[in-house]
Image (tube, rainbow, N blue to C red):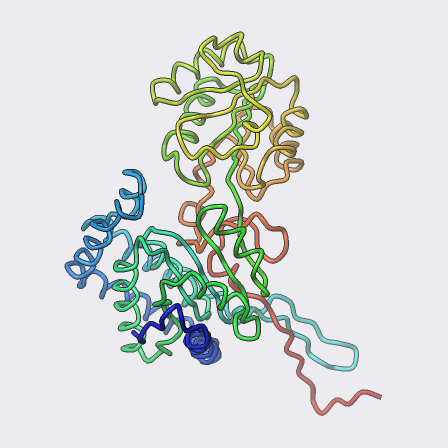
Length: 428
């Protein structure tokens, strides 16, 4: 790793970051031409090296965990940071899952022959250089590096200080595999500067970096969006909804609601709001309140909800748009399917929203009219995840509408170019 410049040396910091980005640009140009089979072999080699490097990875992680209380991490956040043999195996398996994906680079999206004989092809190509800024979890380091490499992109990783030792060791292991396989080593680089100003330096380098992807808290993401001179793939919050339609099966509705809210509360695809059709409220709300209470979840609700669930607190206007990331859920009774759709479109974050219903027409209407990156029909919001949706792994979830939406895997890190072939054609 390069020597870290002092934060008091802004010109040195700029030069250091500039050097990382320039090396990434050169690596991206070389990596773009690497065949898919060679990239996949490199990823499998990286997975094997990670399995062989478990003691060193766990030792690095132990240093991060020991320092975690000093950073103010909660027990839940420390658990997300912690690695053990099983979790390291999960990191290796995740890299292998990406290696098994088909290579999107070089795919001919469209092809036509013009009347004058010109052959026009629209071909999928890598974006180029990705600046990925994220918080804590060490497995995200490996997932992001794997998705970028598989799609032919160079990646600059700027992880949180909480996982600095773990991320450094994982990146060193991946880079060793990249070098051994003859690929450009600088296609995977970890920013070795703790100074937060380094993030701003990279976000200004739109001449070298093609896309910025922030993954973490809303404050981080808003900072990246505010300062970036290049496009940003992101989502701000995950205020995900489950709507129980008047034609819902109540057993299914309970199972999906509890899973969506409680299976893992501190993630972006956990449910934060529950909407119940008025015709189902009397039968469903007392039942789901009991089930959620058993999981330690507090309900805040509208007047109709509180009549049926006396222990529920009153919801404020802010509650309808809040991502709790913890044991609280907002609940509202709605008069119709369209009222549920209107509620989601008003307060939702365009991340993941689910309907539980046996009415196919209601499901179609919900899925087509709700403004969301992922509409779930009779399934938990927790399935909006790259691995669960067959992407192998993801570098993040986008709620944008341009370029990529939903989980971003290898295909979402590509764009296209036109390749036009003639036989000496000249325009007259």
